Length: 606
Ligand code: M6R
Image (cartoon, rainbow, N blue to C red; front, side, top):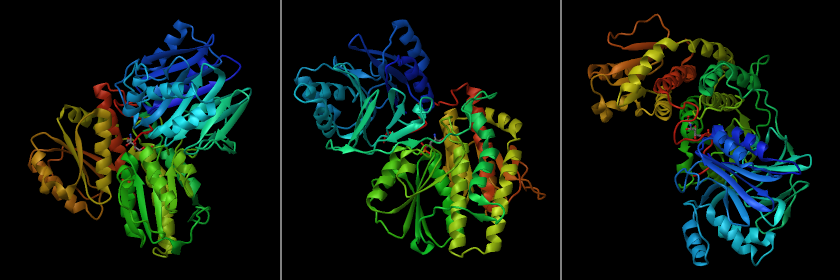
């Protein structure tokens, strides 16, 4: 999704803007651009497509400057094109913007009546003209205060000015924004990841704040222009490399990294000597929590769905789950004895952040499970539980999904033990099982041939289904989501028992159906449902676990067996073949696996 970088320095900066934009590419975007001051004039270079094209255009136009703002755009208002790419400039002001200006149509009409001409179809261009207009009668600071109050919606902004040649203004409402500090230069970035190659010293803007950044000074202000003091934070140094190594795609690498990330995460939370879970900073007493709400989007939501089964089984808490984009608009009854848990790989998902914000405003207990510990969601929660899986670059969430489930499982065990629902013996057995999970996951990675073969059928089909019961149902949803987002094949995830209530009508000769049937409580029932789809012509790819008991069916098209382990941990293993199925299906079709069409890694708009 959109990304912002800005640098004000006493040295040339355009090359570094381009390099930082490249760091933001993984988020998914469709066009890119840069604006700088050149001989006292604002100059823009923009393009549709990749940052490499922008880089070539910058070289050929010989664009240079000691101050610049850059942007990668993921289209919301106006289709992807060079004209709609950011920055958007008037003669005196140039703006890059993440977010959506909801009242842009009204503002545009007012500005057009005043004689301002619009070149693009974007909501952002109104900001450039609005600032230009206010600057005619106001000083810079008052202009910013007044313009920000005029804008409805969400934004992170980076702005440069013809008449203030060393100044970048940053402003935030709803969309994250960070300031970085360097020697004789300072930076603006839509997240700290964009700035990491230049500095590890950053401050974050809070909602409603704006900042004035010069090469030797940074000042922060609240909505009314009152000065705000900021802490300078040191960014964590993750040692994980962000290269593909020998892999063709980040996704393939990230799937294969899962045994390592499970191991790292378990090491962070498990005290192996005393066989106990360490969440040192847990801020509440166990009797202060009687219910729990798990909230996320997409894959993160699926991890919440799996965890619901664990919390119901092992704790006495009332458990509910919610999709963040729905949660934020519900008429909620907040309960002070409820723990609200926000799950997000990026920690920047706008809907999840908004849900957290509502809980914060209602003074609820909040916990976030994130991968990026400097993220907005992490910073604004009472308790942060990182998933420790290292940078995830592929848009499709793989290792982060396993990490999210793992931390939710660990949190569940801790609460269960603290509530005295499980005995110490069972608690320690479960911890022991967790210690073996990484190795079992490693073995599950060795199932490539069968999956590659199966993927050929999935890409030919006009649709497919993923079925499971209990813990396997959310994994069916996740398998279907992966296939949709990567291979662009229609796929439905369904509780296997629901088929006869409607979806069975979709089954026809040769339709590929994934049935998730590890030998758990639901096994026999799921196998019966499998027979029902086979009887109607489905080609079943069965994912089960290794066992001496033969499966009583002759017509299974393909079978994948994961390692054996306790049934509550099956979700970790049966996920892996489904990730690979989506990967190989996309690969056969020659699609852009790490950047699927229309999608973004970090969804920072509503
Ligand atoms: O960063 P988040 O975990 O909050 O992202 C949530 C979803 O946008 C994300 O999981 C999305 O569904 C993935 N592309 C799925 O692979």
